[in-house]
Image 1 (cartoon, rainbow, N blue to C red):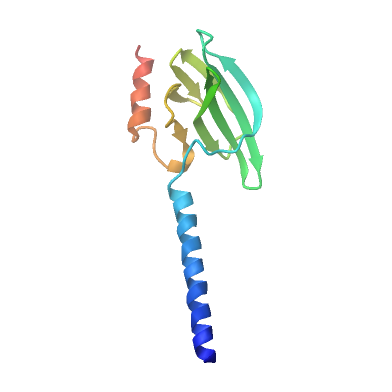
Image 2 (cartoon, rainbow, N blue to C red; image 1 turned 30 degrees about the vertical axis):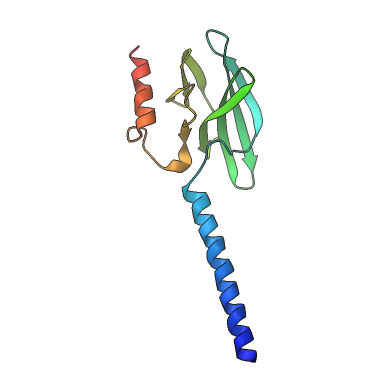
Length: 137
């Protein structure tokens, strides 16, 4: 009877560990740029037409430092930029639809944006590749 109790305890413990590992892997592989820490506002700049505002935040926590960029329009906000390991940022509006943050061009309406956790090259990702066409306009 004692062995059965230990076997059940081992199975339950293994199941809990497996589920925990599963959630950890899911959290590290499937990131959502909408769920980012707030941080401290570093700069805010208004678009050429005055309809949008780009807010740049520096986030410091126990994991390190990062930069988050968001676009605010009509009292709605969406993140377009997340880069870890830096606290310096250079952000400018090219035109009403394009911003450049740390030399990365982004469509200000694109909720996909740039997220360094995705581990892609600027030239491999379709969304960012399309943003380079804004330089030719």
